[in-house]
Image 1 (cartoon, rainbow over the protein chains, first blue to last red):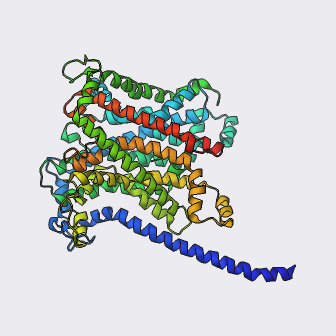
Image 2: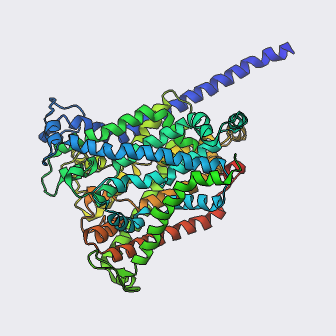
Image 3: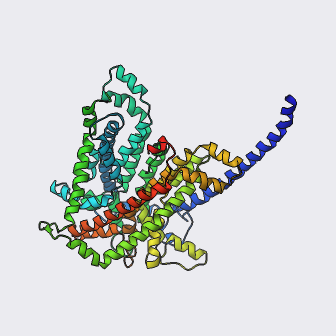
Length: 298
Length: 294
């Protein structure tokens, strides 16, 4: 028995060494692909940062990232804008839309997802079907009637059309994401708490919300970035420049003239992307976990 | 508690109202408006199928329809192919893999923003980075945004660059494929290539299907890219249906015609989805209850 073992040991040793070598080779190949494609993909974004410190002339001649001499002029000029407002106003406007919108989205979507995942009620199947179908509905077809509705309400040129629908859990993607996440959470703890006399809201708040944290963070991050990126909504509903969020102000800075002041436009684009990049990297671990565990798209 | 039907309905009530008010009502109204002439100043006037008849003779609509179909046909397969390829490379225990996952996801997160559209517009401009690179390589610069043959490609590229959202979903699916299957196949002497097409692809068909449908719906609605980068031009070569709908509805305030246009888009998306659902019988395999739950 032991003789057999001793005989076989070197063989398996050679084999494991071979697989290890094969794994190392495969890792090298994968790293090479990852870095090459990654650089190609990210270079435009990286270049954008470098270019924001360059002079207007250098932007049009150099492919390198590093500017020949640093200048913050583009930032100063871009920040001031050609309007009577600075970008400070536009950023504050963006946040005046984003923050309330995130708050109402989280509250409404968590409640609705809780109902779908844990309760039985009349018409549940139909309503759930409506929710999934509405994710596949091209929302552009709702734009005209929604515009007329908000006009009727007297909401044009305010932020209400951009915020209020979210309070009714109409961003169905988030409800779906939360329902999928809730389905993966075992019910034992809730049942125990139920026996201890918790009511439905206490259950949600004390037991489910802490467990839902990664999913809720995903909702916050997605909603932050999507609202920051949203262009068509503000374009349709907002008319006075003093109400413009960053996306509209940026579009304005490109303007109607042929000559674009690229250096300052690029500098402001960097600033405009910064909040989204920061929140993405701050939350990315929970975020990718939340997004992938739901098995659906972002 | 769980059987408390009234309570459940109470929690879902906001969504119920929201769907009625912000989705179902506008949906029906948009259909009704498509049979009217409505310029917002005078009340809508019923004109029957006139808008749809006009559409069939509208050369700009035809152009825009062609551009849209071309755009979708190029963007969706390319995006899915990249997403699956990179997900495959990322589905491996490597040091620093989390960093790469985030890095590849970043363009999808930011890609829809106006700031990135601005960047794109510069990159492909006559003196932009892409042409500088071409010239350093000794090639002729290309008028990307001013040439009818190239302009749509810049928009396609901008969209393919954002393959990260589909990639994340593929990644989740790949991680659910049992490794025992690959081990068994390796013992039988299968190549990596065979494993991919005989094991991986069949097992993730439900997710391929999901991504295909969702990406198609999204591609049909692409707006920021063509609106900002090429402004629909040159010669309407990037004039997607979404731009035409926007122009008719909110620039010219032809709300009836705009609604008819958007119903054409709705019809297209629904028919393509139906084709996908019908064909899924033949190529989508659900292996167990877990997959079915999706």
